[in-house]
Length: 251
Image (cartoon, rainbow, N blue to C red; front, side, top):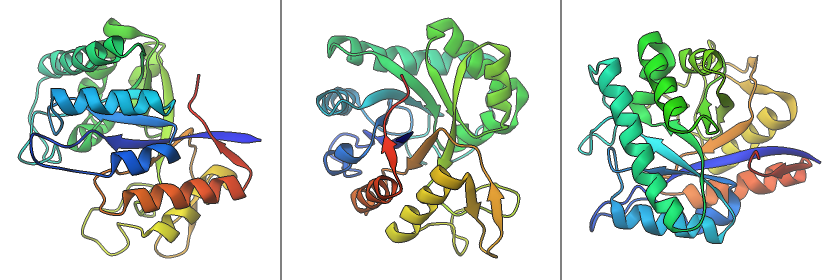
């Protein structure tokens, strides 16, 4: 049976503010990207999310972000490579403390929001990100889109990457995610399930005009901040299973 990783952004509550459906999503995924306190999350939430992932046998990754709680990490920031290097290590270290205390280990790292796009297109920031991961733990996977600046930087550092596809977001004709707010940028659960199946079994994604684009993916992502994240995760998992694709983390 073919296998593919299925990841979700999680642990995004903060203080008394609640975000996501982590307990309902966790049974359907194989990897959890845990917020590390910059765009969301706090120590208690990080600890609880790590324990929840451990109890479900889900691989744990650091979801590192720009320091932007008010903007949920989705606002670009003018940050130097040196500052980004320190910021990535800071967040990796924070989550690593919780995984160690829970008797598990970090599996991967993924940039969040604006940082995902900045490190994916800016060579200097990509190099800083990859170098920070290498200096902290060179065994960690880096989740990034195929062909990104971060993927190239990771390869130069001999780091392992997982090529990521998004099941709940629409793609444009250039293979980029449609900007939020545009028609077709956010997929409903049924659409997400079909997109996941198409990516995992055919290596393709459909654009709004019906064109099929080739995509290379090792891991599929559902955004945990959706109000219907659990429904999306369950439908995607069922769609993959029906297509003979086993959801599992990469060793």
